[in-house]
Image 1 (cartoon, helix red, strand yellow):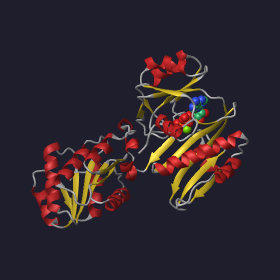
Image 2: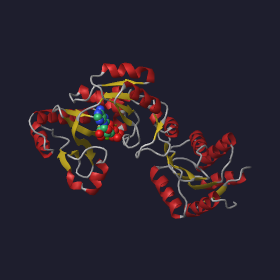
Image 3: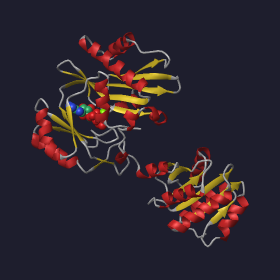
Image 4: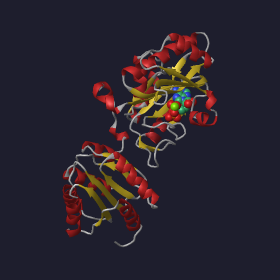
Length: 390
Ligand code: ADP
Ligand code: MG
């Protein structure tokens, strides 16, 4: 689960990490009061969306007057912000953070993540923080400092000093850095975080160290033990279809292709997508309806796929192990009965009662192409989705 910058910064403050003064607003009428409550004559208006790269997408606007702040708010509120990290539709902006503009001296990077290869919590740091950190990592990886911490051990102040000196921090800034890194580590371990990032972590001309941005991703599997974190969820930033699917215990991910897939089992779903690609098509989604699926769930899944704009054909691939193929066939027929059949469909059934299932579909009043072989099914749906006749 992702959270917004303002929520990450609120957690930062609870764990002794310094952030600039800021006010969250959800309407332009609150902008003027927000500005006057902040010290200084420079403000930054920051769109709160679940994506980075906002600076590059026009979602971080530096303002020198309250009028400029109000103009920036009018521009951003209600818009969809497109950044290098969003899709082409962007994400809706409902909240803005008005932050005091800082006198930045240096922009550093500091992050923690789970490194599966080394089986450690890895601290990543760089003197080259800011909006081009991805480029730095890709082109000059030696500028990224890596420091592994044994998950059964702990991070101590001496480790923090070592990293601070690699970041060329001196004097009082070293103490502030130690506090920041220990705070990040504490959030990471106590809240079951998978990634936490401050980019940029700035030093100011007043000799302070501040978290100017904040990103935290939580491990979904551990959310059941963090009610306070679950409350921070903002579904307006999530894919509507994916949320609807998860309400019905369907594992669904939207993709950009044209062939909707309905498969039971994540591995089989991946293999099905590979075969579609191999035969010249492209999948419109990943969908795992689960092992012990029911006719109702199949109906829901079918509804979901058919309403995706880019879908030109549907491939159903079910291996009946625990589930019986004739029940799946009934589910497909129920779904078609309910939502209608507007697209070509190929159904491949294999396993328990596959023959009965395929027969049910063949005998139905609907134009359903059936296959017992997966390769044939993939070839057929690619052809049908490109306009060939059944
Ligand atoms: P994103 O990573 O989504 O682009 P950031 O919050 O990192 O958004 O902001 C992008 C850049 O904008 C920062 O690297 C920094 O240079 C500048 N910036 C952000 N907040 C402030 C602020 N309060 N004062 C001055 N500059 C800021
Ligand atoms: Mg940033």
